[in-house]
Length: 176
Image (tube, rainbow, N blue to C red; front, side):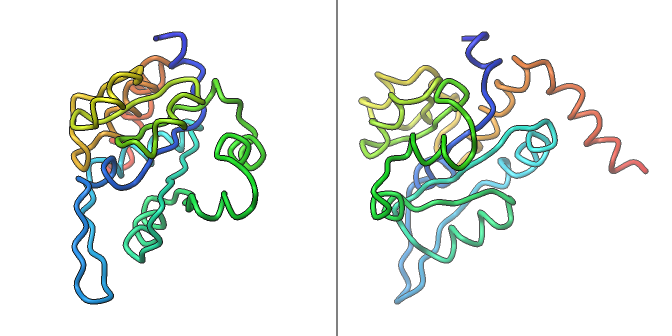
């Protein structure tokens, strides 16, 4: 696994059930989702280290668009890829210039099973479906919405030998 983690250049994450706990609150036309703040700082550190991120979802809601902007990461909707006549693997290769082996995909439910099989490493939250856990290379210690992406970033960066340096640089940026 360590050798596979060293090759990772991009983390692709499903939103609902990974970045959130999977619950959606509908208040009239408004959709409310709860995201963990634990994912944000490590994503910033990882971007500085050269990792790319892509969030993928089926639900087109303002909450997801806003959170992707706050995290300074790309967001794509599964329906947009299908309408363009492509698939996720081709989309990522064409738009980001990474191979399948350089991508870690994290998903929690049946809709992620195909994608989890297509990339170098697949991961799933602790509370994912049994089917996702069965095929995942990594089962996170954390549940969806509780910092799963943060946990995976740390695994990748530790394998690549960059976690300590970028964490120290991040901490130093607050002391000046």
